[in-house]
Length: 359
Image (cartoon, rainbow, N blue to C red):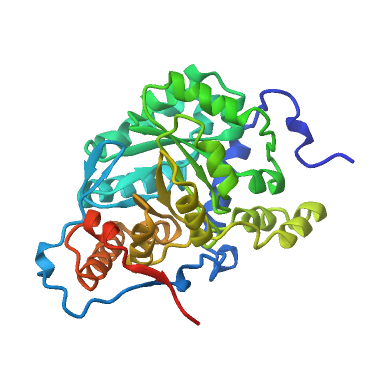
């Protein structure tokens, strides 16, 4: 049987830019569709923060300052990697970057894969850094592409963006279900290890909405990486998105329905991280829809918490809408700190104010 991705069996697939761009535009449109969100699977509804009726602090004393990758930033919030590779992406990323510069958030860009086949695209990244000279900005490439690339090519992506770190995203389910997918992950661990030794910036590994098990986190603990974004089940589900892109390809469409809830929930992935106690930082994303959601994950040990779909929707409406949403998330996190009696993120984590809800 010839699978839809059989054309990619050669070592370096040659994707026409027009096809690549169309796919990225499809991804934005489909990511906003509620049917492609794994609603109610994050597990966050089962986590409770313990209320303190006598906090003995003032609200205006609360600070969200956070330390990550040996740098201090204003908030523990991250705009998760979302979009790249097409004309509309530039405008969206510029708006996101400007908002992050104003609010003190970190930001990850979407996949830089297109630049590997079209080096002239690096000009768009230079403009992004000019808009946000002070933020932590992270590059992004897929593990499948890393395996088939030279480390000098990845360094070129870092240099073009002036990135503070490089994210390697793992998306095995998506690659299996994507019509143009490249589900070739053999040699991935060795490729990450090699990159860590040669790249000029820290390496971060993330999932894309299916989470990490304890066993996988232990494997990663053997590598000199700086952080892992657990990116659990609960938000945008790329298996559903690729299924929606393949309505006339029976095998892919049917398989996407079979795997429409595939993944490890965000909370279960956090529990796995607690079990492993890794040397690297744990970042969390996957269905985070409020500042309270973020607070729960920070209380459990997350250093940064990432938002994707809600910020994408706001960014498409305008900068003011985006800034208002970011302000709300920050305020909600401050409420969580205040109502648990903590003035700093560090004290909040140390106070052990979370538990599983009783039935």
